Image (cartoon, rainbow, N blue to C red):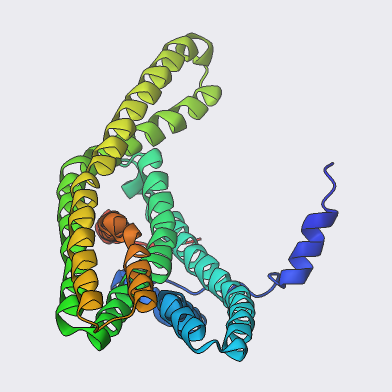
Length: 339
């Protein structure tokens, strides 16, 4: 038996035991209704993440002020704030993990409970592998959706807002162009990602269902009297399915990667425009060099926005996976079998 001393220590340290809350999920309600059960824990996480990204986005300007004023107290304060934010993040992540685990557990528990109670006549015309696939996909989608909203979409909103306010403070035109360029790249990235997703994700989902069904059938071979005769043929079928699944996934991944090409080119173009505008402000005496460097550093810190469309597409895609389970359950049959 493996030594679980480290795990047991961490389990006690983080205090996870007895703190996961499982709530019943009504699949006739909107998919996001479950979040209301965990609004306090999620609210804490969103507040902390907002504070963190406002601080780090404005950090170049804060450092700029500290250098120009030679304020040693401010420099030390920045270090203290950084440590305090680290403590806040560590604290809120415990709350966040408990909420996310609770949401996933609630959906999984309610879904399997539904299929256990449903009248057996409805199971006779359905494939068990597809049911399992849809549940697992939806549970994973809740995790991805919550993570994307909290750690990605929120960050992009804050960065665009802070860039707009900060740049406008020094020059209105530069501020509008800077924020507008980020929005344009976000829109271009999102449109291209959604276009690809709309045309390739359905195939990926269908292949996932086929893969799950073949895997379930493989395990069921053990229970068949003729399993010794059927196994070689089924192993070949499983191999072909795995290869096909790999081909589909590789095509999907490459399609999404390619959509970042245009936003990358746009980022370079907008960077040149903004840099030239900032240089012109320096020449006219409306901006000092240190502040100019800080503003450019702020803008460069948003480079990840070229991939923001992928996050938005993933968000849309995961929501669709969740809705797919909800619709499947609503149309499956009556949950009236006594258990």
